[in-house]
Length: 333
Ligand code: SAM
Ligand code: SF4
Image 1 (tube, rainbow, N blue to C red):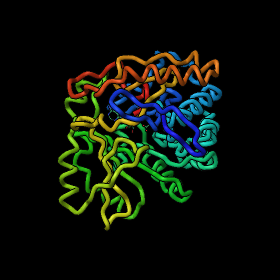
Image 2: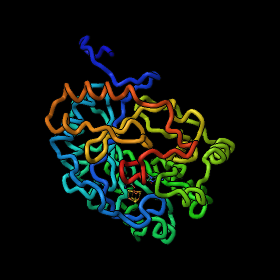
Image 3: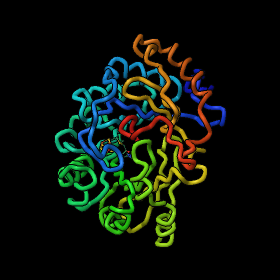
Image 4: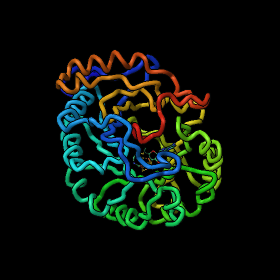
């Protein structure tokens, strides 16, 4: 429990390890139009239930999580911008009392066309995936010749005052030597460029073995060249962030294989079909849809607190355990 303004008592989502969950990652579709080598190399296969959460159901999820202390919602997918009602979904989240930050993770394929409506709906921050700043390399990773459009969309988002983070998955055979190019790009851009260690999933085992690169040596390179680590706040994502006086942008490193990565876990996930995932690599999603469908906020809140009891200390990825996660499009990264 915590005591808020005017002495009101709230329950909070806290697990048996004392971790508190202020941050919800909400997937709204698992469909995607890109075919990233590490995620959906053969493109989206329509082999799963597509009965995705409705706008009313998303309203129930947002208000219940907010009543339990969640202050940040990240909308993800699949590719969330494939849903035509995305601006409405953003607005529902931004208008939920207690939700202070609403973010989206997107491949940005039509970012210049979309960004104004997202900004009007109150989006506070945008994560865009850019694995390479070389158009040909970008196309060979994602299957799409869209880099210029995406970069133009990022510039527009910055002009509109939206906080921008860029995600690049580190891959030995593609971009492992591109650090300098990424650094040059953020010299005059107030964005955070986050380098993500490739994660093993059920479907990408041989790709993972050929391409995984550890982030730690990059961290050491940054520290030796004048970058300093920034302190995290309670709703921060999993990145370690670094700043440098000569760069407008920051660098982030997401190192899920590093020791104690899970100790600072502050996020829970709900899939596009209304299942609670206690971890990105949990064995299964837990069905909370009946409470969501009936708009039963109290029942949902009680169920969330009960299910949280089973959250494990670690994702066990270092032991090669990837749970039920075939690829991250199933749930959002
Ligand atoms: N389609 C959107 C996008 O690509 O930004 C949102 C969903 S995507 C699953 C979310 C993030 O997960 C992206 O930044 C993507 O690069 C990252 N991702 C996907 N598969 C990954 C993997 N196996 N290891 C590390 N990051 C991964
Ligand atoms: Fe689609 Fe995102 Fe997966 Fe790429 S990483 S295939 S854009 S869901």
